[in-house]
Length: 403
Image (cartoon, rainbow, N blue to C red):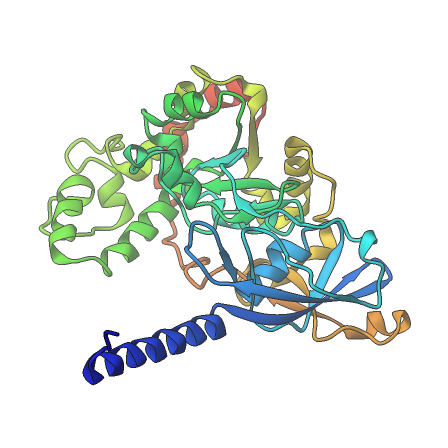
């Protein structure tokens, strides 16, 4: 009988022990038991879910914040409270035990996946797009993308799979919305969006074109301070050259031709405020009924009114009322009120005692100080924009009090 040499036997034993130890480590790290508490109506449920870790293509890791906001609160009245970090396996909540409830009463599994948007906020830049997206994301049937994807203007060659990967995870009952304000002014985007989805819903928010241009100027000026010198030079040559050897002059120096005194129509903040010109490109492909025009001035003073219109347009129930907003005196604009719960109540009577409200505002970059235009400068701008505004009013069948 042939025998393995001692050295070979030792190698085999060592290899076997190493393999067994590796298998033990794998099994101990690929699963995690999580306890999830959910309230639905007057009933409390406790889930014990097991999270399996795998490739990012098949498994969905979610933080407590994302699970609370995008999953439970958005699923037919579910509210989550007091959970540790948990994961959803293959887009489904995995139930291994349910306490204090009849499992048949829960409509599970809850399907989660990234979905292409059914509505896009196309602009206008510096007209309130971020506030608009933040407000509509309060709705439980909306999943809004946090970042501007720039798919149709910058990354179109990446394809639809890439575009889908930029979207948030959502339920089948939710509407996915994305926002990229630069879409409105890019001449290639309308046709690309139409070829992507000819029935998509478009959301456009506009404000006084003079104030929008000034706000655009302020944003560009602040942004320049954070960019590299090389990028500054490119932007300087393209947008900001004032003829005084400076990267930035005043708004008046940039918006008016220094020689003729006429308004500089090639200056980007001025061009972006010519709403009618950009709108025409979109109406060459889409029906006006597919577009909702939001009043950016009204969203600052009565945001709930504009949200009501948006909910109607998107076919959503009316859930974002006046009670969801609180005016911040320091910032000078409305913030949203968010409901939070620390832990589940022991009885239904205690539920109201555990509800806490927190205020969430937009970033500090919102509400910056803006230069005040001289009366004659503003009047000249008003005279310049008036015919463009009238054409825009006629096309959208709405008028705005822009002075």
